[in-house]
Length: 301
Image (cartoon, rainbow, N blue to C red; front, side, top):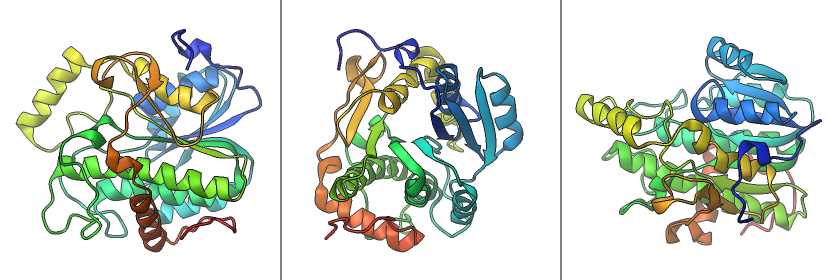
């Protein structure tokens, strides 16, 4: 990457581009959508709460629209994809939940697994025939924390649910998904590429929703004192969405611990570089969602 610090104003013109941002009604998604719209893109905000989405869209310059999507619900994902009938340059898989009390999605999957991985997996595969440029999936530094692992024997955390462990596993899944997707895209010589990014420690709507009063209070306090603003946290996502990058790239803040700062290549845990695990997760996700890679000759084993 260039030594010059990347800002939202460093983006090229996005005129005539269409970008879909999931979870675009607040936090990182709203900032990402706003800056892409400012750069000239037509931005589609895919949100659960369309009233909040419309409110966010009214603060954005340029061309925007709001469509309903509950990424945790595979029926909602399928309905959304079936209604999409136009070229899509960039898909930003941003919507997510963090360290919430255990509950299940409409299809009975643990909610963090469903929202942070299965929904984006299904949405990406269903929209791939329309995508022309790239897929960006938002991961987290949390995937590198000690003990972070994806439990293939119990992906729904039915035996022993730990909110932070489940979150870490879902963010690791984002990187394994990106790796397996990029492999498939290269095997069919697609012009589309797969990328990931993380926002560091940024002030977003995710913190403070753990369902644990003391933990929630601590998160809100540290969020206020230590976190960088969402405008900075969105920069790695914007970089991954607009800059020339190798496939399966991972972008995050350049500061100490990748917590703050301007975009730079981010570090992945060894578990995120495991091609066997990436393929195993892909096959599991394919089975659970029924959303298959739409092109032949994927080279998958």
